[in-house]
Length: 443
Image (spheres, rainbow, N blue to C red):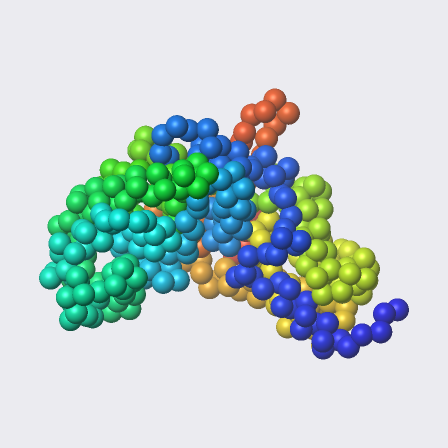
């Protein structure tokens, strides 16, 4: 038996399963074999490295499934291949997810490009802002004349405008109104800047510029008085501008948008890709042992960060038994963040190690209660049909299922190389009495 302070170990393990923090390199697990051979280098990277033209890709997946982790790995890989990668999480400084339009995204991309790549000589984007300073200076909360600003202050003006757009709703509408008058000229100026930046970077041995705008999938869908979605307005109505930046660009988008009835239209305008679940279960509901083993490895690597010795005996010292850990892994549905959340919740129900079957049962019960609270009265039958058919309809209701993680998307590859996507309700929903009764109904 190991001698340790229970409270200390519980606190450290709890921290190791922080659900909103990308994993350290030594805790990363490669899930390619249990995600239908999905690999970020092949799915996203090769479109960049093998194309002689600028590419524009939309990347999606359920919230918390690991998109940021994969994008950061792609960033590191592309940088190793001599690309200059401008990565940013748009919701942290640039956009308000509850209220976002195309102008906000263009301004965000512009800001990060001009602030991260400083070029000598006349900057076309700075010149663009200079020509319109009379219209924009109030949004930067500055009365100083533009030509009296230093270059750093001129570049910082974009950040100040961005920050005010995000924080002040009144300014947000005014900036959009001005930006929409000038988006064509701004994209032209931005492309002139990119051309100059590419020349500078080429002299430094770089191959090109890649912009990765992460967390745009958090933009909440809203509809105007005509029923038109802001997602449609951004990615469809403004597709020419969104894909008109003359460097490689990756935007994250909500999974409900890519799996909608606009999928064909989206595919005609962009390259698109979805990061699927880890297959801890098969289409028939049985355990997928390869996927379960990958999730066990994930847990072990995180425990190892706390104590390497405990990681080797975690089935008895951290968890009451291997079966207790397996239940957590399976009931996550193959969703990484949900697994992290349920491990933390099980620790909340634990006073002394090991984490018991009862604590895990309580954690799963709380997750199930979350779904009971989420699911509306008229959702149950449609969810039952998804469970029975393993497919979804391309309508607003099923988009809500994806958005709320009531339904998860899986991908597997057959022995003949055929890729197959299928869907199922989250495993905890299957345990809800109302859901069971609908499944048992002869109708």
